Image 1 (cartoon, rainbow, N blue to C red):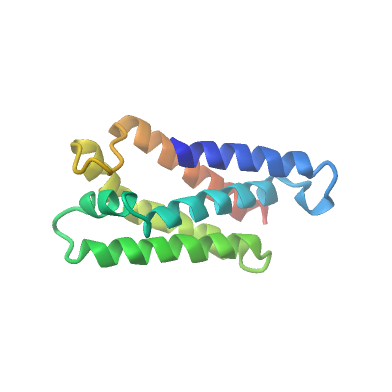
Image 2: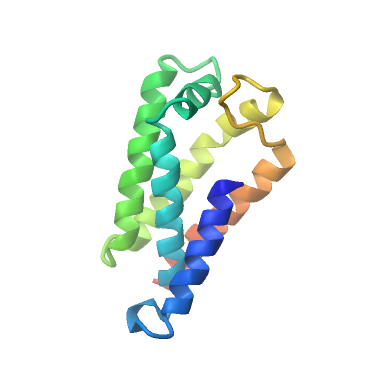
Length: 146
């Protein structure tokens, strides 16, 4: 739920600032800033305990070295967020982050199946799927609007 709140609140704040700051006077740009804030926040959780242990626990067991996968996805989220701030790379970053959301969805399904670890996310699958759709829609807004 926290990523959704960050996305919505930062996007709304950026759009509101757009009334004064001309470059922000655009929904795709404001959405890119909201997504960037959300992905910076989520990327940090890949490296900070206790959430890191929880994220490692939700990597499906068919994947070797879940610790490395969590680090890689955290780095990808961070660099994607940085890319959202740069107008030249904004659309490509949004596409890549959208693809990352799709690739990571099996971990979300696995996480929704049971409480894997006390520090792991355990949002029910329907809610988790709806959140993912909102995040994907935000990526599409950024790509189409650029």
